[in-house]
Image (cartoon, rainbow, N blue to C red; front, side, top):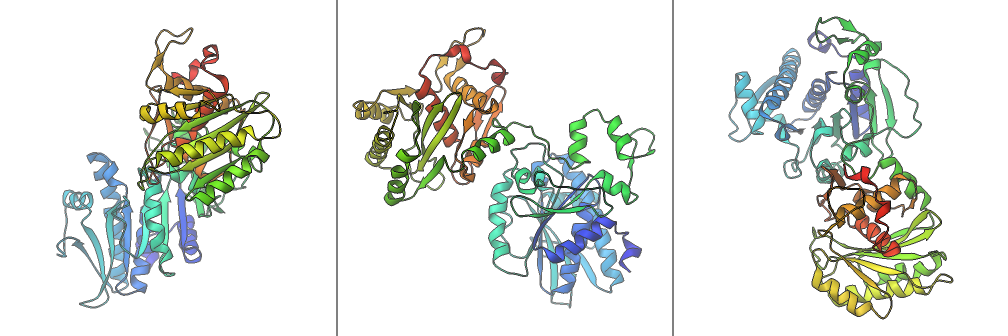
Length: 513
C-alpha cells in the first residue's frame, strides 16, 4: 500500500530500519535524495503507532532568506501531501492545523503554507478518534524552540547556526524517555567549525564501499550515521541530471561538469571537507593534542581542592626548557561569563609544549592573584630549568587589574601587559596591524608548522575552534559555556612571555590576508 503512494529508495528503506535500532541516528545523504520525505514518513509511522504522540520537526528556515524559505516550504509541503495520501490509504484521517489557534486548515495555497511554515505555526495531525490525535509540529531549530517532549526530527542540521546549543537542548529530552528518539538529516556543513562536522564525520580510515543502501558507521562522537552518496544512489538507479539538457548523468560525469568541485564533493559525495573560517585547522589541532597525551593537561577549577591537585602536578610534568606564561584575564563568575585561562608554555627545540592550562571563574581578585602566584612558584620548583622567563597578561579589557598583577608578581618574574588593540608596524608590511592579529598569527603559525603539543582535553579543542579568521581579523563569539577562545589566548600570550616583544621578522604575513 505504501509503495503505491511513495516509491521508497533502497537507502531510505535502510534508514527506516536503522531508526528502529538506534534512538539517535543521522541520515547523511546527497542533495535532493528525499531526506525530508523519508523523515515525514518515519514521523507518520510513529504517529500511527502511538495515540497522542508528538513529533517535533525542527527546520533551519529562520536562518534562510525569503526565497529559500519558500523552497524549504515546498519540500515540506510535498512531503506532507505524501504523508496524507499514505494515511488516507491506511484509513486514517490527517489534517493540517494552525498550532497557535488549533484551527484545522482544510486547504492551503503555496503562499499560505510558506507563511505558516515561516511563522512556526504548522501542525500535521493524525486522528485516532474525534478527540485524540498525534501530531508533527514544525518549529525553528533554535535552543528555545525545541523544548517540547517527543520524538525529534532535525532537518538539514549542517546549515543550522549554533547547532551545538541546539544539540545540548534536545539531548535531555531524549534521555528522559526510552521511547523518544532523535533523527538528524543533512549533508556535510560548508564550514569545518560547525558542530555537525565533528559530530557526524566518519572515523579516520573507515571503509565505505559503494552500495545502493549506503553505509552505516559510528562517528567518533558516538552517533550512528547512514551515509548515502551520489555514487550509492546511482547504484540504486538514481542519477543526476545535466543543468542544461536534462540528460541523466553518472556522478563522475556530474562532477566533471561542476565548476566548484569542493561544493560538489560536500553536496553529492557527502565529503567532510576541511576549510571555512576556523583559525585552527582541525587535523593540525588533533595531531597536537595526540602528542600531548600524558605530558600536558587542562584543569577546570571549580573549587580550591581542584586547583591544589592541578598545581601540585605541574613541577613533575615540566622539562628543563625555557618557559613563558600567559594569562587571559576574567574576573566574573556568571554562568555565561568568560573564564580566566592561565597557560604554561615550555620550549624544547622547535617544539612548543603547552604543559598546563588552568581555567577558572572567580569574582575575587585576591583569589585570582594567589592562584597566579602559586602557578609561577610551581614552575620555579621544577627539577631543572628554573623560573619562567616572563608572564604576559592580556590587559585589553582589565587594565587596572593587569597593573595590579604586574605590581604583585614583580618579585617573582617580569610581567608584560599586552593590549591587543594596540597597533604595531611589521617589517615588510605596508599597513600596521593590531597586536591581537600579530600574536594570533604567530600562534596559529606554530600550529600549522606542527610545532605545538597541547593538552588532549575536548574543552581545549572546542575552545580553540571558536576562534575564526574573518577579513584578516581574529574574531570569536562566546559559546553556551561562556568560552571565548580563552585557552587559545593564554597559549599565544605564553608564546609572548617566552619570546618577548621582539622577533617581528618572524611574523607570518600569509595569516593576515
